[in-house]
Every structure is written in C-alpha cells, then in structure tokens.
Length: 118
Length: 114
Figure 1 (cartoon, rainbow over the protein chains, first blue to last red):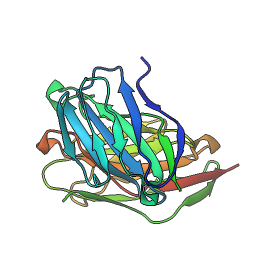
Figure 2 (cartoon, helix red, strand yellow):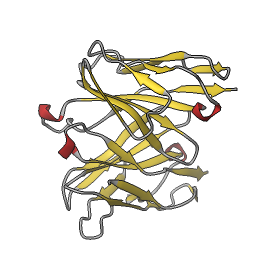
Figure 3 (cartoon, each protein chain N blue to C red):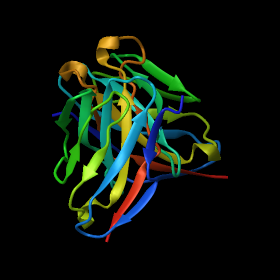
C-alpha cells in the first residue's frame, strides 16, 4: 500500500491564481481530512469527509473548497489564492468509527504540500 | 469546545537525557488521546495513543498515561537519542460526533544534541 499520497510537493502561486491539491489513499478509508500547518500553530482542520459525496467544514474553511466523488480521492481547491494561504497542507484518512477495533480512530497522514502565495 | 494545550517552546536536551513534554486537554465526552510525531520534511505519524482513563500508551520507548483527574497526557522517554529529534503533537479525538475529528496542540520541537 502506498498509503496517503499528495501532489504536488511544492508550489508557488501568484495572488489570485487558483490550484487544486490532490490527495489519494489506497487503504479504503471512509474518512478523509485536510489540514493546514502554520509555524508554531499546530494543525488546523480545513474540511473533512465521512464518505463519497459527503463533505463538511472544519475550523478554517474560508477560501477553500473540496469534493469527494470517490472513496480514494479528496482534492482541495483554492480559487483565489491569497498570501494568508501560504502554509503546509496535509491530507489524512482514517477508518470509520463504525468499523470499530483498535485502528478505528488513527489518522494516516500524507507527506504534505508546501504552498507559497506571492 | 475541545482543545489541547502543550507546554511552550522548543526542548533541547543531550543524548540519553530524560524527556517530558506536557499536554493537558479540555473536552466534552470521553476522548481518545494521541501523540503524533513529525520528522523533518515528513507528514505526521502516530506515536502512541490511549482510549480511556488510566490507559498507558507506549511505543519506541515513549510512554504517556491518560489521566482523567488532571486532564493530562504527558509524554515521557527515559533516554533520548539524536534520532528522536522531531516535532511532537498531542491530540484528542472525540468520536461522539462520529467523524474522528482531531484537535491538535501547537507542537513541541525536540532537539537532541549528541
């Protein structure tokens, strides 16, 4: 298993440009998440999804959009990039809590995308 | 709402020293508690977890005990190595809402000097 993969690894955007951060998992996890990590601030949840076709806002959703058309993929869209969106973005996935067992609440993280908006 | 507080500032210590990183939490319900580790240039990895009061999580020489009476989950290791240099995040998951959302602390940079 490749686990959680993210592309690209690095990207520089100009203000007002748009882009999509890709995230794919091959563990058949129902739940997927997008976080941003700012220096000294820990991780903040942007959006999450509990299954294909279902998404919901996290703590910091403004300026972002998501979709979940398949179990495997959970892309994050930035429509009008702003300097405040300069950050490292992590995608994660987990089993549904309904699956039970010891692994039900562990999240698996991708390697991250470092985004700079100038 | 749920929140996690970690001690302020980076931690610098010598190889074979004792490491403690403090973590306290505020939560409704009965959260699971986690320590995640982030090595340079990588994503987060689960280090250990505890799902109920008085449980002790352990992995790679690290330990943490779920203390409901003090709402704490402090991370300890008896003898650190240079390879333990990383950022450590305390987190909680309250599955009452059925989505496994995690609330993270700000993280602590640990630097181990040979």
